[in-house]
View (cartoon, rainbow, N blue to C red):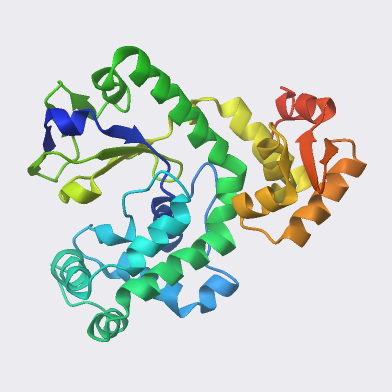
Length: 325
């Protein structure tokens, strides 16, 4: 059991936010373990990822750790804006002595670390290289997953925000997962064989819906300034919507489907490029095809053209008979 006592100041500063860095590490753990996921199938370290030395450093951390622990500095507390960039900056800025302790003392507590990991620690490059590896994972793999399914996290955050606003933080935390309880004072996470107790005093707790950590709860509570509780995103309880989106991805391509789902509100090419981490030319190409098919409309405002999905696209995204064979 992991127990964290929350003082009144901390309980009043519980907020909800996505954690792109944690999603990247969850994807990598799936790939290293060869496990299958209902959203992404069986991830593979192929193409640029197989040749990226910084990604391979992260692989060594995931595959070689014998304690079941990954360094917390790889999944820092998400901020309130520009979550991925802010997290990557936090990872890169991790002090050398902190990286050394988390990697050599905690992750490899039961045995020697791989030579590549030791070299990165001794050279003082572990944190910067880890940040580069995370960015590469996002650019070549996880960003596409987020583009296709990130709306589920946003929907769950909206749902829990409504619960918190209506009934308070206790009610919100109590709805997260059967293994999570909160009595207004102590947050308890049932997570055998782990046993840990601490106090969160005058700090902030971030609750983060997880796309790729299902069905596990993942608490990160031992460092008060980095307190995060990840839980399986609840919105995945709608299997019809999830299956439909995967089917449309096979039909149209995941990138175009991701853009369509993101165009519930009008957005310009530059905004979509930033949100999906694609070049403006790539976004423009896909929008042109979607427009030719009558799936998006466009309206010019001065020098800016805003795109929004059409009524035809709305019907397509919600059509119940789209299924996977």
